[in-house]
Length: 320
Image (cartoon, rainbow, N blue to C red; front, side):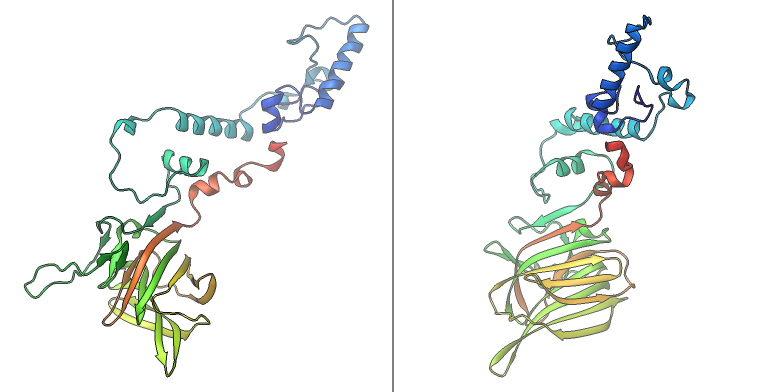
Protein backbone atom coordinates (compact mmCIF):
# COMPACT_ATOMS: atom_id res chain seq x y z
CA UNK A 1 0.00 0.00 0.00
CA UNK A 2 1.17 3.55 -0.76
CA UNK A 3 0.77 6.94 0.89
CA UNK A 4 -2.14 8.91 -0.54
CA UNK A 5 -0.10 12.10 -0.30
CA UNK A 6 3.38 11.29 -1.60
CA UNK A 7 2.82 7.92 -3.27
CA UNK A 8 5.62 6.17 -1.34
CA UNK A 9 5.16 2.69 0.14
CA UNK A 10 3.86 2.67 3.74
CA UNK A 11 6.09 0.81 6.18
CA UNK A 12 4.92 -2.38 7.88
CA UNK A 13 4.68 -0.93 11.39
CA UNK A 14 3.02 2.26 10.14
CA UNK A 15 0.40 0.23 8.23
CA UNK A 16 -1.00 -1.17 11.50
CA UNK A 17 -1.72 2.41 12.63
CA UNK A 18 -2.58 4.15 9.34
CA UNK A 19 -3.12 2.43 5.98
CA UNK A 20 -3.52 5.72 4.03
CA UNK A 21 -0.57 7.94 4.91
CA UNK A 22 3.09 7.20 5.64
CA UNK A 23 3.29 9.84 8.41
CA UNK A 24 1.14 12.17 10.51
CA UNK A 25 2.67 15.12 8.66
CA UNK A 26 1.43 13.84 5.29
CA UNK A 27 -2.02 13.21 6.71
CA UNK A 28 -2.11 16.81 7.98
CA UNK A 29 -0.92 18.18 4.63
CA UNK A 30 -3.56 16.19 2.77
CA UNK A 31 -6.24 17.51 5.10
CA UNK A 32 -5.14 21.08 4.47
CA UNK A 33 -5.12 20.49 0.71
CA UNK A 34 -8.63 19.10 0.87
CA UNK A 35 -9.78 22.13 2.88
CA UNK A 36 -8.30 24.39 0.24
CA UNK A 37 -10.14 22.53 -2.52
CA UNK A 38 -13.34 22.67 -0.55
CA UNK A 39 -12.93 26.43 -0.24
CA UNK A 40 -12.62 26.66 -4.06
CA UNK A 41 -15.88 24.73 -4.45
CA UNK A 42 -14.35 21.43 -5.58
CA UNK A 43 -16.63 18.44 -5.24
CA UNK A 44 -14.77 15.53 -3.70
CA UNK A 45 -16.28 12.47 -2.07
CA UNK A 46 -13.82 10.35 -0.07
CA UNK A 47 -14.00 7.52 2.37
CA UNK A 48 -13.48 9.50 5.56
CA UNK A 49 -14.54 12.95 4.31
CA UNK A 50 -11.23 14.54 3.39
CA UNK A 51 -8.69 11.99 2.05
CA UNK A 52 -6.82 13.08 -1.08
CA UNK A 53 -5.50 10.31 -3.34
CA UNK A 54 -1.97 10.17 -4.68
CA UNK A 55 -3.21 10.36 -8.29
CA UNK A 56 -4.94 13.66 -7.62
CA UNK A 57 -1.76 15.17 -6.22
CA UNK A 58 0.87 13.77 -8.57
CA UNK A 59 -1.22 12.63 -11.53
CA UNK A 60 -1.87 9.09 -12.61
CA UNK A 61 0.84 6.62 -11.78
CA UNK A 62 0.34 3.01 -12.74
CA UNK A 63 3.14 1.92 -10.43
CA UNK A 64 1.24 3.26 -7.41
CA UNK A 65 -1.37 0.54 -7.69
CA UNK A 66 -1.42 -1.97 -4.84
CA UNK A 67 0.67 -5.05 -5.45
CA UNK A 68 1.76 -8.05 -3.49
CA UNK A 69 5.20 -7.02 -2.23
CA UNK A 70 7.56 -7.80 0.62
CA UNK A 71 5.34 -6.01 3.14
CA UNK A 72 2.33 -8.11 2.19
CA UNK A 73 4.42 -11.24 2.38
CA UNK A 74 5.69 -10.42 5.87
CA UNK A 75 2.14 -9.63 7.01
CA UNK A 76 1.01 -13.00 5.68
CA UNK A 77 3.83 -14.72 7.59
CA UNK A 78 2.83 -12.95 10.82
CA UNK A 79 -0.79 -14.03 10.39
CA UNK A 80 0.27 -17.62 9.66
CA UNK A 81 2.45 -17.77 12.78
CA UNK A 82 -0.35 -16.36 14.93
CA UNK A 83 -2.81 -18.95 13.63
CA UNK A 84 -0.25 -21.72 14.18
CA UNK A 85 0.16 -20.74 17.83
CA UNK A 86 -3.47 -20.00 18.66
CA UNK A 87 -5.47 -22.63 16.80
CA UNK A 88 -5.76 -26.07 18.44
CA UNK A 89 -3.81 -28.94 16.93
CA UNK A 90 -4.99 -32.46 16.35
CA UNK A 91 -2.32 -33.92 18.59
CA UNK A 92 -3.26 -31.87 21.64
CA UNK A 93 -5.66 -34.54 22.85
CA UNK A 94 -2.93 -37.18 22.89
CA UNK A 95 -1.37 -38.05 26.26
CA UNK A 96 1.99 -36.49 27.01
CA UNK A 97 5.08 -38.59 26.60
CA UNK A 98 6.35 -39.77 29.99
CA UNK A 99 9.90 -38.67 29.11
CA UNK A 100 10.85 -35.35 27.53
CA UNK A 101 14.38 -34.12 27.12
CA UNK A 102 13.25 -30.72 25.85
CA UNK A 103 13.59 -27.81 28.30
CA UNK A 104 10.39 -26.07 29.50
CA UNK A 105 8.89 -23.51 27.12
CA UNK A 106 10.45 -20.20 28.07
CA UNK A 107 9.06 -17.76 25.51
CA UNK A 108 7.92 -17.04 21.98
CA UNK A 109 11.04 -18.54 20.40
CA UNK A 110 10.49 -21.90 22.08
CA UNK A 111 6.78 -21.94 21.19
CA UNK A 112 7.49 -21.19 17.54
CA UNK A 113 10.24 -23.80 17.37
CA UNK A 114 7.82 -26.51 18.53
CA UNK A 115 4.76 -25.29 16.61
CA UNK A 116 6.14 -24.70 13.12
CA UNK A 117 6.38 -27.61 10.69
CA UNK A 118 9.92 -26.91 9.51
CA UNK A 119 13.15 -27.88 11.22
CA UNK A 120 14.12 -25.61 14.09
CA UNK A 121 16.86 -25.47 16.65
CA UNK A 122 17.34 -28.62 18.74
CA UNK A 123 17.94 -28.18 22.46
CA UNK A 124 18.29 -31.24 24.65
CA UNK A 125 19.16 -31.72 28.30
CA UNK A 126 19.82 -34.94 30.17
CA UNK A 127 19.97 -35.07 33.97
CA UNK A 128 20.06 -38.88 34.25
CA UNK A 129 17.06 -39.03 36.56
CA UNK A 130 15.39 -41.76 34.51
CA UNK A 131 16.79 -44.54 32.35
CA UNK A 132 19.32 -44.61 29.50
CA UNK A 133 16.95 -45.47 26.66
CA UNK A 134 18.31 -42.60 24.55
CA UNK A 135 21.91 -43.77 24.85
CA UNK A 136 23.20 -46.49 22.57
CA UNK A 137 26.38 -48.46 21.98
CA UNK A 138 27.32 -49.83 18.58
CA UNK A 139 29.51 -52.44 20.25
CA UNK A 140 27.75 -53.41 23.51
CA UNK A 141 29.79 -54.74 26.39
CA UNK A 142 29.16 -58.44 27.02
CA UNK A 143 29.51 -60.48 30.18
CA UNK A 144 31.42 -63.78 30.21
CA UNK A 145 28.21 -65.68 29.50
CA UNK A 146 27.53 -63.58 26.40
CA UNK A 147 24.73 -61.47 27.89
CA UNK A 148 24.76 -57.71 27.57
CA UNK A 149 26.33 -55.91 30.52
CA UNK A 150 24.84 -52.68 31.85
CA UNK A 151 28.19 -50.99 32.26
CA UNK A 152 26.99 -47.42 32.89
CA UNK A 153 25.93 -46.79 36.47
CA UNK A 154 23.42 -44.20 37.71
CA UNK A 155 24.18 -43.19 41.28
CA UNK A 156 22.82 -40.27 43.33
CA UNK A 157 21.48 -38.46 40.28
CA UNK A 158 24.71 -38.75 38.29
CA UNK A 159 25.94 -41.15 35.62
CA UNK A 160 29.28 -42.95 35.60
CA UNK A 161 30.21 -43.85 31.98
CA UNK A 162 32.24 -46.89 30.98
CA UNK A 163 32.19 -48.28 27.41
CA UNK A 164 31.22 -45.60 24.90
CA UNK A 165 27.56 -44.78 24.50
CA UNK A 166 26.17 -42.23 22.03
CA UNK A 167 23.22 -39.92 22.62
CA UNK A 168 20.78 -41.05 19.92
CA UNK A 169 18.86 -37.76 19.37
CA UNK A 170 22.15 -36.02 18.48
CA UNK A 171 23.48 -38.41 15.84
CA UNK A 172 22.18 -36.42 12.84
CA UNK A 173 23.50 -33.04 14.02
CA UNK A 174 26.29 -31.10 12.34
CA UNK A 175 27.07 -27.92 14.27
CA UNK A 176 26.24 -27.61 17.95
CA UNK A 177 27.34 -26.64 21.43
CA UNK A 178 27.79 -29.36 24.03
CA UNK A 179 27.84 -28.56 27.74
CA UNK A 180 28.20 -30.89 30.70
CA UNK A 181 29.16 -30.86 34.36
CA UNK A 182 31.65 -33.48 35.48
CA UNK A 183 33.48 -34.61 38.60
CA UNK A 184 36.65 -36.60 37.92
CA UNK A 185 37.18 -39.17 40.63
CA UNK A 186 40.01 -41.10 38.98
CA UNK A 187 42.26 -40.15 36.06
CA UNK A 188 39.93 -38.73 33.37
CA UNK A 189 36.56 -38.04 31.79
CA UNK A 190 36.16 -38.81 28.09
CA UNK A 191 33.67 -37.59 25.50
CA UNK A 192 33.04 -37.99 21.77
CA UNK A 193 31.63 -35.58 19.18
CA UNK A 194 30.75 -35.74 15.49
CA UNK A 195 30.34 -39.40 16.39
CA UNK A 196 28.72 -41.67 13.80
CA UNK A 197 29.54 -44.93 15.61
CA UNK A 198 32.26 -46.40 17.80
CA UNK A 199 34.71 -46.40 14.88
CA UNK A 200 34.21 -42.84 13.57
CA UNK A 201 34.26 -39.92 15.96
CA UNK A 202 36.36 -37.14 17.46
CA UNK A 203 37.47 -38.02 20.98
CA UNK A 204 38.64 -35.88 23.89
CA UNK A 205 39.63 -36.36 27.51
CA UNK A 206 40.13 -34.11 30.48
CA UNK A 207 42.96 -35.80 32.36
CA UNK A 208 44.22 -35.38 35.93
CA UNK A 209 47.58 -36.92 36.79
CA UNK A 210 49.92 -36.60 39.74
CA UNK A 211 53.32 -35.04 39.12
CA UNK A 212 55.43 -35.63 42.23
CA UNK A 213 53.60 -33.65 44.93
CA UNK A 214 51.25 -31.73 42.63
CA UNK A 215 48.38 -32.46 40.25
CA UNK A 216 48.69 -31.89 36.53
CA UNK A 217 45.68 -31.21 34.30
CA UNK A 218 45.76 -31.93 30.57
CA UNK A 219 43.42 -32.22 27.62
CA UNK A 220 43.81 -34.91 24.98
CA UNK A 221 42.00 -35.04 21.64
CA UNK A 222 42.16 -37.14 18.50
CA UNK A 223 40.20 -38.40 15.53
CA UNK A 224 39.03 -41.99 15.21
CA UNK A 225 38.44 -42.88 11.56
CA UNK A 226 37.64 -46.41 10.49
CA UNK A 227 38.49 -47.67 13.98
CA UNK A 228 41.99 -46.13 13.97
CA UNK A 229 43.02 -43.31 16.32
CA UNK A 230 44.96 -40.60 14.47
CA UNK A 231 46.26 -37.08 15.11
CA UNK A 232 46.33 -37.50 18.88
CA UNK A 233 47.51 -34.44 20.84
CA UNK A 234 47.83 -34.07 24.62
CA UNK A 235 48.36 -30.59 26.06
CA UNK A 236 48.56 -29.08 29.56
CA UNK A 237 45.79 -26.69 30.50
CA UNK A 238 46.01 -23.61 32.76
CA UNK A 239 43.38 -24.87 35.21
CA UNK A 240 43.90 -26.65 38.50
CA UNK A 241 41.57 -29.66 38.34
CA UNK A 242 40.80 -31.16 41.74
CA UNK A 243 39.46 -34.74 41.96
CA UNK A 244 35.82 -34.86 43.05
CA UNK A 245 35.17 -31.17 42.34
CA UNK A 246 32.52 -30.18 39.76
CA UNK A 247 33.66 -28.51 36.55
CA UNK A 248 31.64 -27.17 33.63
CA UNK A 249 32.90 -28.17 30.18
CA UNK A 250 31.71 -26.48 26.99
CA UNK A 251 32.52 -27.73 23.48
CA UNK A 252 31.57 -25.74 20.37
CA UNK A 253 31.47 -27.62 17.07
CA UNK A 254 31.17 -25.36 14.02
CA UNK A 255 32.26 -26.42 10.55
CA UNK A 256 35.83 -27.70 10.86
CA UNK A 257 36.52 -25.71 14.04
CA UNK A 258 36.31 -27.14 17.57
CA UNK A 259 36.84 -25.16 20.80
CA UNK A 260 36.74 -26.39 24.38
CA UNK A 261 36.26 -24.33 27.55
CA UNK A 262 36.49 -25.43 31.17
CA UNK A 263 34.71 -23.17 33.66
CA UNK A 264 34.56 -20.53 30.94
CA UNK A 265 38.30 -20.61 30.19
CA UNK A 266 39.58 -21.66 26.77
CA UNK A 267 41.72 -24.79 26.99
CA UNK A 268 41.80 -26.07 23.40
CA UNK A 269 41.01 -25.04 19.82
CA UNK A 270 41.72 -27.00 16.66
CA UNK A 271 40.53 -27.72 13.11
CA UNK A 272 39.79 -30.96 11.25
CA UNK A 273 37.70 -31.78 8.17
CA UNK A 274 37.47 -35.56 8.24
CA UNK A 275 34.09 -35.96 9.97
CA UNK A 276 31.23 -33.74 8.80
CA UNK A 277 28.33 -34.90 10.98
CA UNK A 278 27.56 -36.89 14.10
CA UNK A 279 26.41 -36.74 17.69
CA UNK A 280 27.96 -36.84 21.14
CA UNK A 281 28.78 -39.56 23.61
CA UNK A 282 30.85 -40.39 26.69
CA UNK A 283 33.23 -43.14 27.70
CA UNK A 284 35.75 -44.22 30.32
CA UNK A 285 38.70 -46.52 29.84
CA UNK A 286 40.38 -48.82 32.37
CA UNK A 287 41.06 -47.06 35.65
CA UNK A 288 39.11 -43.95 34.70
CA UNK A 289 36.06 -42.89 36.70
CA UNK A 290 34.09 -39.66 36.41
CA UNK A 291 30.55 -38.57 37.21
CA UNK A 292 28.32 -36.61 34.86
CA UNK A 293 25.73 -34.49 36.69
CA UNK A 294 24.00 -33.25 33.53
CA UNK A 295 24.51 -32.88 29.78
CA UNK A 296 22.95 -30.42 27.35
CA UNK A 297 23.30 -29.75 23.65
CA UNK A 298 22.10 -26.87 21.47
CA UNK A 299 22.12 -26.94 17.70
CA UNK A 300 23.72 -23.87 16.16
CA UNK A 301 22.26 -21.61 13.44
CA UNK A 302 18.70 -22.87 13.44
CA UNK A 303 16.43 -22.12 10.48
CA UNK A 304 13.93 -20.54 12.85
CA UNK A 305 16.49 -18.13 14.24
CA UNK A 306 17.44 -16.94 10.78
CA UNK A 307 13.79 -16.79 9.66
CA UNK A 308 12.81 -14.57 12.58
CA UNK A 309 15.78 -12.28 12.02
CA UNK A 310 13.94 -9.56 10.06
CA UNK A 311 17.20 -8.18 8.76
CA UNK A 312 17.51 -11.28 6.53
CA UNK A 313 14.09 -11.12 4.87
CA UNK A 314 12.78 -7.57 5.30
CA UNK A 315 14.42 -4.43 3.89
CA UNK A 316 14.98 -1.88 6.73
CA UNK A 317 12.77 0.75 5.08
CA UNK A 318 9.67 -1.44 5.31
CA UNK A 319 9.71 -1.21 9.11
CA UNK A 320 9.44 2.58 9.11
